[in-house]
Image 1: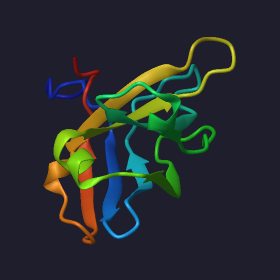
Image 2: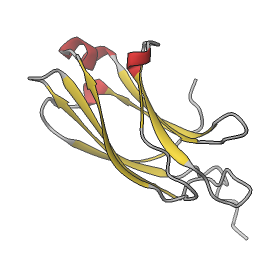
Image 3: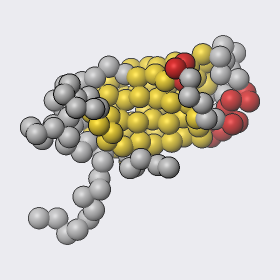
Image 4: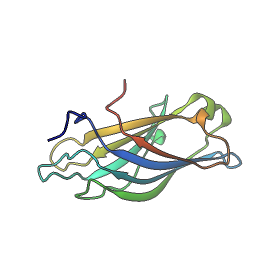
Length: 138
């Protein structure tokens, strides 16, 4: 029995971002998540992380990690890289990181997301984040 401290907790996500200015590459290292909201009947989830660069809807804008089975505390330790990222992109774009539950039978379910404006990053400097996931943002 909790004291109403919000059952909205979706979990936390640890990741780091590095903009390699010389090679116009944005490296997104997805470390791990913990305390994810259970999505399956067994009280677990099959989580994966997908990345979008906003604004933009092209396929090249979408990257994803592998799916880990039956865990609420996944460790992906995967680096996903966007190439051809310009200084202008870094000013204008936002990285959207979504954690989803892969489901064979139904649609993949959204667990939570976070958004990082790329202008928060310094070139050639790794910034590490540990962020509470939020419900889908508009």
